[in-house]
Length: 52
Image (tube, rainbow, N blue to C red; front, side, top):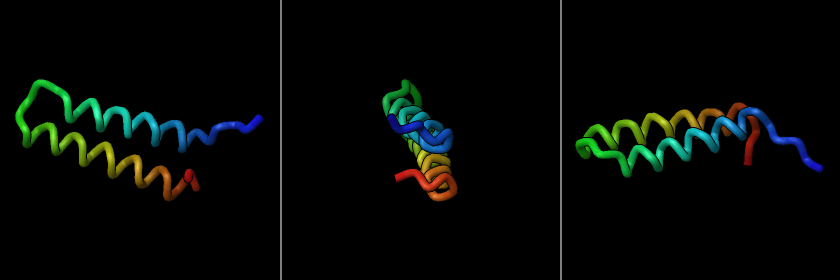
C-alpha cells in the first residue's frame, strides 16, 4: 500500500478549494483571484513535494 505525500494531499485540497472558488457566490474578479491563488499554491506544492 502506498502512503500519500503530505504535499500531494495539500495540493489536492488546494485544487478542490480552487474549484469551489469558481462556484462561489461572489464577483467574477473575486472568484478568479481566489482560483488563481489556490492553483498557484497547488502547483508550488506539487513542484516541491514531487507529487505527480
